[in-house]
Length: 169
Image (cartoon, rainbow, N blue to C red):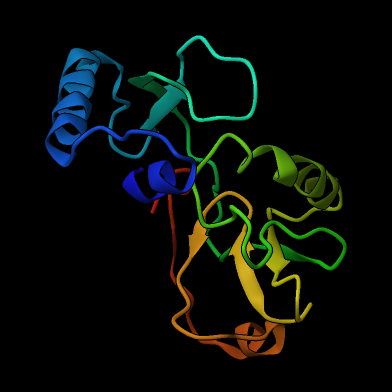
């Protein structure tokens, strides 16, 4: 959130404020935490420009909040994810805001995800816009890669680590 706030010209909560807010929110909602194996408590921090301004400029004030919701397991698969490689749409571009967690992160995946799931896939793997062959990211979770990796390399890999806000590890 701190990196994204800087990129979006917003004043972030301090690390201490952030951690304290998460703790208080989870404790206040502990009755909503699903039992083990039945899901998870989804935690979403938000920082909103809330000051009175119209126009293209940083907001004069911000609202920091955290909401939570119980969720089921997004990916109930025992033999691995069945991913579709999307060659038509890209999520991030060099110099863009793809590395920033913002309101624009989730909406661009919806069309690809709906199309993939209607064809029997569990998720979508997006490629780097410039190369069209290296892995960029997955649609509903993070995929950990320490260097440029092509689709062919992923297909031959013995193991790939995926985690994130929408993937129950």
